Length: 416
Image 1: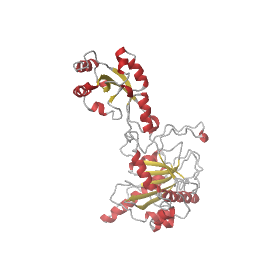
Image 2: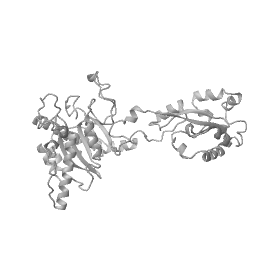
Image 3: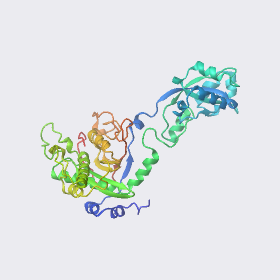
């Protein structure tokens, strides 16, 4: 994509008139940095032990066929990143030294062009050594004794070519299959980053606008949110919302942290829900009486720009809440808001300012490596955008401004 195609003016000209009216500031492209998952940051690899054997090259196929009868194929399918067979010359240096010094025959096997090959049998925990020896002994070339050794290997696939090379040097010949078992697939991240890069600054600019408006009105912290729908290359503005935690509470009250249900992300999701309810009542021609009216939820639009967007129809009223939508936030959402975003089935999330003590999306330990927070501890990062144990995941980015949007300062201890 050339510079002309990526210009903000060209991106803005392609948007709906209401978006062009709302975006008044001069904005520039920023940088999108994909978040790392908890597994990518903490579990670089876990090792387990496998049994290996050494056989004449001509006996490799009979040995593998025998092993299939001895152990289910699934036992090795859990190691797609490891080569099943390896030549003596391909072994890591420490394994070569260990195996070649066992006997004169071993030294001969590892000298010059070898007619032997090493084969992974399977996980040691699933094998009985005596049964393995008994099964392999009758094979031609194995009569003089079955070689059997236990070695540690990584239990998960490498996430880069560099890591695969490192594991090949330290453990066993490994393969990088251009995937990522610990997070989003690299090609998916690259594709989706390119998809949103052209206009991300527009939506972040609108989130900033909401943050400034609520701060000026005295309703809440300078935190704003913008939600859009992207479909077949077209974008539609779905909701704008700002933090309103102080709208009905006195921030000077000792110990008061404001209304948690009026966080910007919670309000934005609620406004989307109200749009869907509105579309449903129009379709069924019903006007249900609310079971509970409670001011704390701040479900309706409060600021003028919130209302302008709220009055627009939802572009996909048949969908599930925020399924596949994109959320742009000025600040990393707190744990409560992060879970709300997750449960609403948001598709993508982009935020500008990290909340290193209270954020719920980042996986880095909260409070660490922040000189301004020396001595503070927010606990382990949760990385809620991508967790295996949760039934939804999404791609998330941190957006770094090129300097056109001034930072929005909030207390690091605030739950955004």
